[in-house]
Image (cartoon, rainbow, N blue to C red; front, side, top):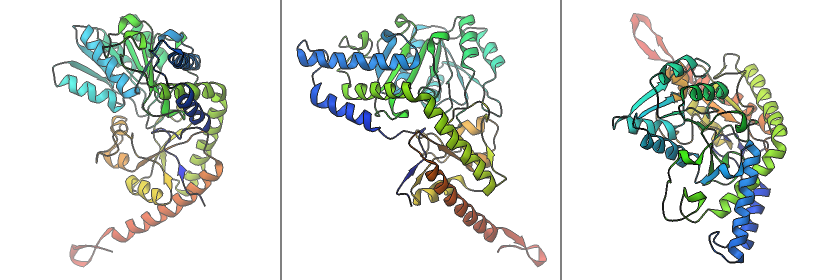
Length: 396
């Protein structure tokens, strides 16, 4: 019925038609180097300024605080390495459920002697605030705790985290890649020193992201050799990516509540119906406090990787973990940190919706999941060992 049903929108989203049009227009009419003094350079500078303004409006930030980069991974690395270079105490505080672009930097630094404290989470994936307070009593170079988890959609108590960090006078970095465009993000009422996110999570292009700085003096240049991005990231700007990012942000600012309502309706319908197919399923994460587009479903005693593969054969795209770690034959570090066993983590699958998905696609997916579950349960029954006479085990 459907050539493709794409339910992996936390990994990346499809480029929207209006973003594609904006990029094509920029390629044709604004191809100049933004640092050039001639008319083409001026047009390019204006296009970047407009994009910066659109992005700042989406998150209620001042325009001059928005810095462009290649994406949240690059910007996360920049923030963490910068903080540790500037503070001789060399103490990094992260949570156990961060994206790999934070946790792998932390692990690399720890191997070099940097002190790293990992704040645990409860069964719902929410950090233990008292642990954070304890960790900051001796000071720290930086706290890096995400806004929304990419695997479960669980929303962290950012308001409280920012308050605790402010009281301890420790800079706070918030990876908001899964929050911007899915929540009403307002940085004006939170003390977040560094906020990072990417365009491709909300129908923008890949290869471009933004960092919002509370104070530009808190960060040293990533690259030298030019005055681009207020002298913090030298090199000719990715004008096509930036223009596309700006258009995506402009569209999302207008449609955010509609997107939240639509994806929430799809997600809730999906969960309700899938429970009727397999009543024993569980939803991983904080069901009452998560973004509207994400569900992480545990299929007890079934192989999540097999479900993903069989759905893929039917043209239905979903995933088990972050796209940045899915090639590894290990259980989700997020789910394990939440207290799930390795078996439970391996049996879990993430479905993430977007505003382009439809109820028809959800119905089609549910039908295929029902057939797949029956197939896997049948195989499980046939291969289950039984005890024959004399105590010998054999397979049915």
